[in-house]
Amino acid sequence: MRVGIGYDVHRLVSDRKLILGGVEISYHLGLLGHSDADVLTHAIVDAILGAAALGDIGAHFPDTDDRYKGMDSLIFLEDAVAKVRQCGYQIENIDSTVIAQRPKLAPYISEIRTRLAETLDIDVSQVNVKATTAEELGVVGEGKAIVAHAIACLSRLTEA
Image (cartoon, rainbow, N blue to C red):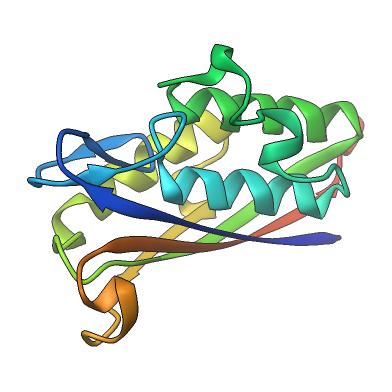
């Protein structure tokens, strides 16, 4: 077994879509970043890469490279899955938490889990997404940013 942890934070701004786990969330603000700034997917990518000791998202998709400007972060996730499989690992499960004061994410959790599971090529029962607030503390609590944490568990691929 290999375990990796991921973390990401992005600032909320106007004139951007809010994308979490590959799902567009209805909200008047979106996340600022070089790609689509999907904070949840970025944390999961880091957890997967970390579990396989393959560095982090910035090493593979630097924000200084214009090829990744505005890119759908699910592409980064697909690439991370391919990289860990090439190293002989499979994803056992993902557990994640999104911390956002607003908007309320409960109505989107099922769709996010499904989208992530499809991209990870695993069963939805292997993907957990939780949402909580920051109890109005700090930049997240003030509604200025969204944070995500993720843990990935990998195991050696079994031969068929």
